[in-house]
Image (cartoon, rainbow, N blue to C red; front, side):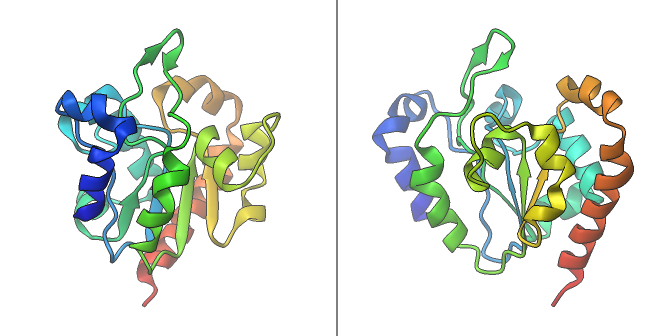
Length: 191
């Protein structure tokens, strides 16, 4: 894939490429659903398999799809806001680097002409794709997810770090997740 080589050769990625790291993304031409999240965690970076962690297990549960369907059906694309693990900060991973999405996402999305749904996982993806101001609150965006349909479906990050948020906002798993699963089902069943 030429774009993989281009990303690896990009000067902004030279240190990461020198480490032997490969950019983490998946853009099959057959994809109907694209998941745009933050950036790979260290486990994902080391294995080269996106959403290959506890967050991924919860994400697939929320989507209502099996491990095999997520990875092998060709229906799912994955484009993080940064293709590489950004490093560890004081309270979690460092934010994705600026400029990655602007430079590479349009090219990757163009390679997937059958996209019917883009799931925006977390604040970085939502702020960028929904053109939200810096003062936006992710809880409000996710509560009002229907305002961004039919193309975009914003959700919180499925990380175990969000267990407290999920416990305080039970409406998310009670109301939003069933709608997400129905939307995913409808897209996957469409011809």
